[in-house]
Image (tube, rainbow, N blue to C red):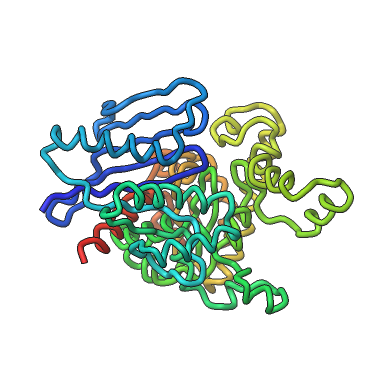
Length: 396
């Protein structure tokens, strides 16, 4: 049986997508693309697996295509491709959804009840959840017969012990859902699923995965299950990121409110969009630009990033009671040999011995054979993970 699975990842002004074919139970990527500038100057671009352009369009400046129009255009394009690609039907759509709350431990097929529950979570992630849900609603209106699946960035971390999820706040607030949730769970789930192919011993042991990109976090795995992570209630917590601050003393927020007279929205914009590597350097949120710069502020931003990774790595090793392996993934983790080298050198006290040549070559193993802690570079594939869940839940 052959059928197509679409994977959608919606942002505030963009819609990224991938299309997979299920050929006798094997998922094969076929297309990948995005629509961006949805409310200003929309652009559509999709490429096939060979990197060839398979679809392209732009709209005049000032066009408000929106998520609804983006969905409509994407499905029209998919219908046009069906004839060229042998008639595979689009059988289901999987969505990346930022927050599953306390209820969802795994991916779920979407119905009225699920959608209502996800809408109730909007106050927990107001900058992401509404946009994640927009294409779901658009599809339910235009193609109500299309099966849809929600995959949550938080779900993988629900295996953590209660003590790892708790804040030391009055219980009344914990009961309202204020606790540590963790994010990047789809990426961590994928790494956990493929780690046995790289290192079977580590997969059954104590591993820290470093998802380092524009959004960055670490996750401690024991036997492939999340036991602790650096992100907490929101995706602001933990490591400094491209434009997000990472861990911050709550007293700073009180000072910004009471004495510098910033309102909540101004603080929100600063913490999410003006901080991190961009805020410290004043130059860029892109690690490649910072590493290439001779400006001392760029070096300060990189130093802070590496220092915080080292601090958090030690914390997660303590939560695990030791460390058997370290895995680098995501944009910076997969592509920056310099950042990997600096993190590994700082982690020598944990038993990490870096193989410099292997690291420069990109791995997959970048630790020396005698290293007590194995170190790997493993590309993540969140889209494939979502496609797997979607395929499984819509074949049932």
